[in-house]
Image (cartoon, rainbow, N blue to C red):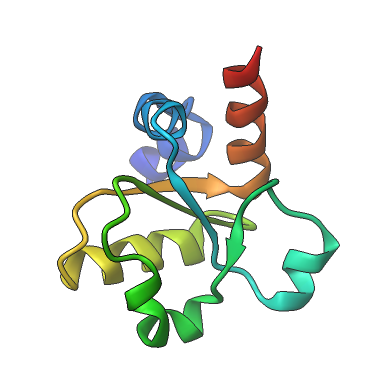
Length: 108
């Protein structure tokens, strides 16, 4: 139980995310279309988690892929799914707000 609490309050290591963003990562918002329309990261594409299997061709030949969502849960599932399907250049960015913040910091 203590480990779960530590993980909840631990700071997030965004070094992989920062590197991917600096190298022009392909940004994939795996939330629903309605969530995406309510706000997302500039230049991100919306591929909802439940449609990801049908869109693998869009991800081929991408140097880096960052997946993200509202809380980090769906993006974690997306990362696992993509890695099981041969994509090893995938970073779970967590929340779309986290990814947006990293992008804004990288531009400065």
